[in-house]
Image (cartoon, rainbow, N blue to C red):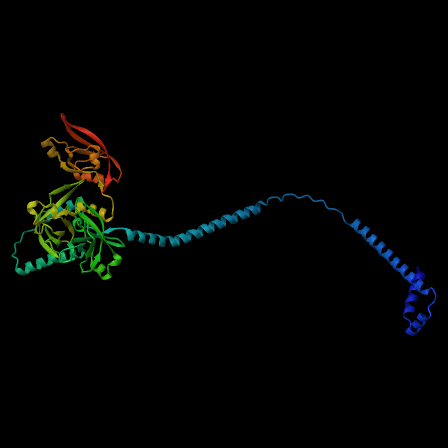
Length: 480
């Protein structure tokens, strides 16, 4: 092998000889030399390839001996209880922080939401002017004090001069001026025209009885707004606004109109006042009163006089109302209110309830008996209806006439719930829904506690051949 290497080196050196020499050699080649060099070169290449193959085999053996297959077993990771406890603690802590934050946010925003809800509710709620009502105990105490004061006082007679009278009447009518802020004029018109091409119009007095955040509520008579095309209300400052009909009661002839506040100018809202509804149970005979509105049959009229009677009553369907009569001269078509010297409304003028021979004297329905009805109409609530007109049978009458104590049925309305179950004229109602009734007012209060569609039990006494016997009815009430 060493000889071969020497030959290769010799061949390499020969290849580097000068061109001249090389040329000479090319020109005069040695016989067999070229073939010998090629053979030597081929052998050297084969030897080199063998050595490389031996080296690769050795490396392969070394690699095979240095690696081994690894066997592994996958096992479930054991639970870290401490880590779980830490995570649970973080979760609980986060919940506590979130709850505290929610509570703080709710505490900060809740008052605003509640205030907004109250404002919305207040805007829809009908509000009435507070009256100066007294309890029975306060009334008794007041009467006792007045009696004591009367006994202690000494009567002093003093003549009044014309100036005194002028001052007195000026003070009295100043009360009327204050109360007239709640008085309005209601004008209704129809599209039909008379011979002069003028629409038919009628006017009557009205009373501003309540307000909500959005509307004014005006009490007037149903006869003026029934079957009309347009209704207008003129306030105390002369501003005329269109009104809408809401609800009426055929028993009393009362009706409620609505006027949107958005259509009433700010200066008019400042000028008007809600009527203070007083207490008529304390009104006595001889008490000085005023009649304002349209008592004489025309607007903006005022009358002065005294109360002549408070004991009269009028029975209507399922109700009874007290009457206040006065000596104030008025019109049979008069309207308005009766006011005491404190400026409180104690009666609603209703000339239709006056006796035929006293049509020229002002008569009004007691405000204490009418207050709940006014509130019902203003709230657009149902008026519960059974359909009887009754009269009180007191113990005195019972002893004299032999009629049981209760509500004597004078009339049963046609197709009413009372007629449908068989209640008749002459029956004496003694019990409603398990409550004993002895007066029409007591019967009326029991109906007010019911709703449309309620079925109530009514007990009555009916006269037979052998005297009065008890009869029972189940009446399904209606609304009107």
